[in-house]
Each structure stands twice: as structure tokens, then as C-alpha cells.
Length: 252
Ligand code: PEP
Figure (cartoon, rainbow, N blue to C red):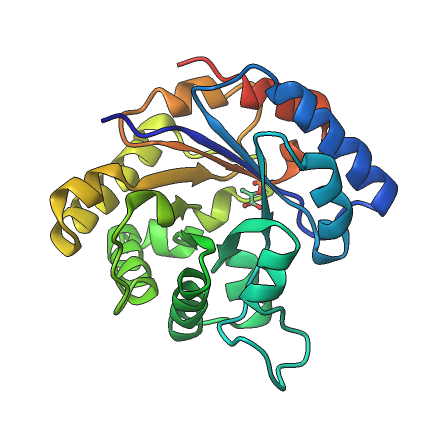
């Protein structure tokens, strides 16, 4: 069975409500007639309800950029998974490097978010990746192994589609520097083998591993041609309707 490629747009802290409505509308149009790939967008929390109306009835999936693990309670600034479900979200980005680096989220906290999302039927997209110093210090695979093992600690995956991973080398995010196809494939293959050692083989083979880090309309085809790259997590280029449309229409 083939893994269905997933193209995911992370809008970060951008878009007014009017911009979000227009961009989501363009993504819905761009997806018409596509049945061999999945597309997801993650607007800021403030635009989720607006974008939910636009994507309703389309094949575009709605995601949050983070998710809490508790059902409710005194967690100022957090959003519960059930609240996201109510808005029509079926996925959530977890452990993005901006959360790790700017907001100090660590592997243990990220693991709680993964578990919480799954408990409430939200598919987490668990992000991990090395910094430039770690790559230059020959630590890349050790860092990936630590982040993936810790992020998935105690997590059982019964259905491969319910869990997505995203390799995002920190030095490639928002910098215009993309990992080469070979660098990305090497990391993805390493993580695939790690998953094979952690989960039942038929499940690990089906779990999608996205690549993220300055993906654009010019490099998406080559990246997605790699055997273990199952989609893209796209930041900057997902904010421009024309470039995201070309990424959605990647050619393998
Ligand atoms: C991201 O935000 O996950 C990302 C990969 O950003 P960019 O595509 O801008 O590098």
C-alpha cells in the first residue's frame, strides 16, 4: 500500500480574517479534482472558525498550530483538543521548532501534546529536526532519534494515518536554505528505520514523514521524489496562493 502524500501549510502568525478567507478559498479551488494527495492548512487560532466555513465540504483539512493535552481547566493561553474538534480541526502541528526554541517547549511537554491530540481524535504532526550547530557537530541522527523517541514515548499507533511526523531541520526553516534531496532522504530513511524498530512493521511503513524547511514551487518536485519523503510542511510559501497551488500540484 502506498503512502498518500500530504501537503501541509503552516500559516504561523500571519493573516487577517479577510486574508485568511481569501487564501483558504484559493487553496480549496487549487485542490479541486485532486484525489491522489491530501492537503491541510493550519491558520492561526483566531482564523480557524473563519477558515472552517471556507473549507467545509471540500477535501482541504483544517489544522491547529498547537494543541493542549487537557480537556479543560486552568491552562491560560492553551487550546483544548475538544475545542479544536468543535471548530472542525482534524490535525494539529506539535513540537514545531519555533515552539521549542522561542517558547521553550521540551520533548516531555511535546509528548504530552501528542498524547492529548490522539486521545481526542486529532492527528498530530510531530515536528523534529537538528540545529545547524548540531549538524556541523555530527549530531544530526542522535538528535532526531532523541526527539522522535521522546515525542512518541508511550504512544501506541493503531492506525498509521492517525500519526504524522515532520523532519524540519532548524537551519532550513524560514531561511531560504533547503536541505538537499539527499540530506532530507538520509534523515527520512533513518527515521523510517527508527519507526520500524518502535512499531509493528506494517504500521511503521505506512506512517507519513513530511519534509519541512524552505519548501517552494521550485524544489518540491525533487524533494517529493525521494522514497521516504511523504509530503511537505510549508511555511512561507503556503502564504502565497500561487506558490502553494504549485506545491499542491507537485509532480513526482
Ligand atoms: C515551517 O514553518 O514549518 C516551515 C518549514 O517554514 P518555511 O517553509 O518558511 O521554511
